[in-house]
Length: 172
Image: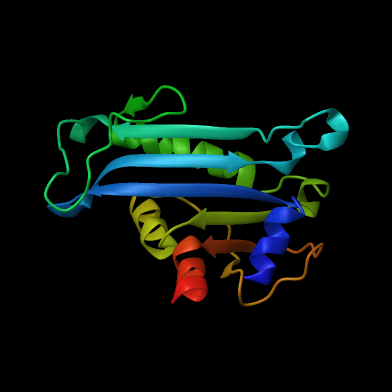
């Protein structure tokens, strides 16, 4: 837990949080994708930023718009509170997500390599599997943050912060 808390509190890593909702009767069908990105390069106190800036997106897959979860999961598809939902075809959702991944998770210069990068989510293994099934390309070197991390270390590792694992460690 200490490594995760240090990473977040020191604000030296881009945090790419993602949550994917599948259709309860067929988990191969992705109905919604939520993304929230914290980029410390946009959140520097010396630039006068006092309230964190987050980039938030709610994608609804148009082909499955009418599919509603109700038996085992709550249907909150119409309850996005952070702006407008984007209703897009499945393929366009994939293109949109890949463009965000390319921009935030693949450093293009030596200066960009000085910032850490982390995927954040609850049950990340499932979400990453779903994204790979959509054809998403990820950084090659990805590890759970609990394996190895030194604050301020710069390497080519993209870390995974799984809030499900954090909850399990903290609460059993």
